[in-house]
Structures are given as structure tokens and as C-alpha cells.
Length: 298
Length: 173
Image 1 (tube, each protein chain N blue to C red):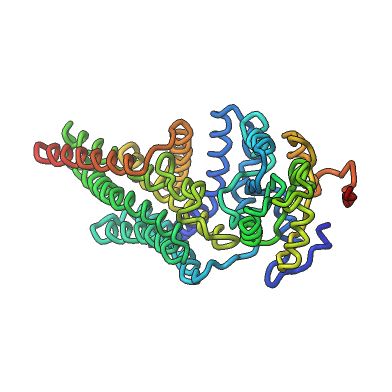
Image 2 (image 1 turned 90 degrees about the vertical axis):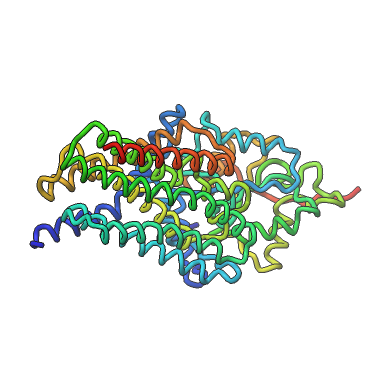
């Protein structure tokens, strides 16, 4: 790997760390526009929120040291997943090992966030977290199936572009889009945001810098999921040319997908958690069955 | 006002207060109100007034809040929950006492079942060692939505106060 590629990867990783709160600010403005409001004063509002949380007092919940530690570990894992994903996408080193590493890093960040809320002494926080666990158990299955199926279909398309290969790609992409949307924690799957309104859930005990880190990690994970979808779409459309083009296209497409998810969320309402789980399970099983049939005939 | 805030352990209160001017998260605390002021609080949060344009956001936990919107005369039944909610807030913690009841107890200023407004609660909080960094009183029965927004602006030092709060004791008989 030459110096320019390393510099580009570092640059994109740093930009990826700063972009999510900015995109969240844009999303808030767009959402306000849809709801006929003005919305936050600037697109930097999420940055201002995080900056404020960073200087506020940290009220440590009873027995919550482990919870706060896991929040910071979760941030480290999500930053690592962005850096590794950038490296994999730019150098085109997608192989079973790198895919497995990516899945482990992404799911580890999610699971550490959940572990942080289970670690507190607040029973309401624990109850709320288990609702999230139920949802993630179903979604992780859909995410893995969608991610692997999309990558496999992309490989098949490059060697044997038949209509059935396209169908397999479309089905895999559909599973990936739905699972990343749910993984982003958007309506009606925004349990970590919805639960505090019922005085329970993962966030309820966090304050100050711990809350800020949790929210920042969450935004980073949203960005990672959008980046994965952007990669799955851009690879089919443009293919890989050089690292700079890949970076520019990925950054632009990721931002568009991030905002699009926000627009979809603004138009949806909340639903019951058990209904969400049931719907997702039915959808993923149906998509997987269709995928298997498409692969068999392709 | 900003310079007057001291350090609290590792937290620089003046610096933290300065950051609140662009982002302030509020927690709605009903202490036994008739719901008149609560409806006006909800009105402030609707798209019509859209307080998100001032960086204001409603949160569901006092742990996340910078400011408590306190309504009601603080009934004895709610007292321990009110104290615990205010104590759960990270510093700098701010309070907006809303409506006639929140400001001074309203018609419940000296009944057996209420504390009689925020000033008496503040004395109690002080005796319990719970510091509140700044308070603004917004009178009205019910309080107007515009007055609530103006109260937040006053609290953050974004507007100059037009009147001064003066506490008077009621004379029995």
C-alpha cells in the first residue's frame, strides 16, 4: 500500500468521525421542513448538543462504573469499524476474513452499547435494554444475511450477469437496507430514544460525557450502516476505479442515504415493539427463502 | 451571571453554562398542577412555537436535562419525587418556575397539603445540600407560551429582565 492510499484512508476515517453529527443536524433541518417547522438554528446543532454534554457534570448511577466503561469501549469499537471499513473498501480487500471482522466489529459496538445499559442498577434501564436485545436478535440475522448475500451477488454479477443474479442482488440489497435502517435505530425502531419517554431504557441513567459518548457512538453506527449500503449500491453502478473516486462517491452516497433514512423516519409513526419484531422476522425469513431460490436457479 | 458560577469538582460551571446558550434540554416536572400550565408547556413544544429553533429540546429523564420546567404549587405527596428529580440533574442545573402556583403557590400558598411554590422548595433544597444554579420565575395563570420562551431567554442571559422578583410574606388574619 503506497503513501497516498494510506493518507486517503486516514483522511476519510477522520472525515467519517466528524460527519455523523453534521449529517444529523442536516437531517433535523430536513425533518423540521417536512413537519412545517424551522427546526434547529443551524446544521451544527447536534455538535452543540454533544459539546454541551461533554462539559456537563457526570452523575454516576449506582454501580454504573462498568456501564460508563462499556460506553467508551463501544465508541472505540465503532471508530475501529469505520477505519477498518474504509481500509477494506478502498483497498478492495473483501474476503471472508475481512467480512467476518467487519461483522464482528459492527455487532460488538451494538452489543457493548446494550451491555452498558444492562450494567446499571436501574431495573427500568435493564427492562428497556432487553426489549432492544429482542429486536437486535432478529435484526442481526437479517443484517448478516443481507450483507453476505449482497456481497456474494456482487461477485456473481461481475462474472455471470444473468437476470437471476440481478434478482439475487436486489433481494440481498433489500434485506441489507431494511436491516441497516433498523440498526440505525430510526422510527419505529428507535427504542433507545423512545424508551426514556416511558422512564426506562438504555439511555435513562446516563448524563454528561457518558450520554454524549453514547449518542456520538450511535451516530457513528448510523454512518457505518449507511456506508455499507452506499458501498453495495456504488460498486454495482461505477465499480472500482481509483481510491480518490471511491472516497468521493462513498462520502456523497453515504450522506444521501443517511438523510434518506431520516426522511423515511419522519414519515413513519411508532408501533408496538413486539409487532416490529414479528414483522422483521417474517420479512427476513421470506427474503432469505427467495434468495435461496434465486441462487439455486442462477 | 456566568462569572458568578463557581467550579463544582471537575465541572467548570461557568463554561458549562456558556455552552447551554446554544443547546438547552428541558424536563417537564408537574408538582401537582391543575394542568393549565402543562397544556401551555405542551403548546410551546408544538410546531407552532417550535422551540427547537432556539436549541431547546424536551427530554424524558432529569439526568439528560439542563432545565426543569416546574409547574404546580409542590404538593406534599410529590415533594420527595420533586427533590429527587432535581437532585438527579447534572450541574449546572436550572429551574423555570412556571405559573402562579410555581412562582408562589397561587391560591394554595399556605394550605396544609402544599409547600406553596418554588421559593419554599429552594429553601428545602438548600438545607438538603442540593444546589440550583439559576432560577427564573414566570408568572401567569396559566402562563403564556411566549412568556415561557422569554423566561428561557432570561435564564440564559439572552434577554434583559423587565421586572424584578420580590418575595413578600402573607400576613395571617
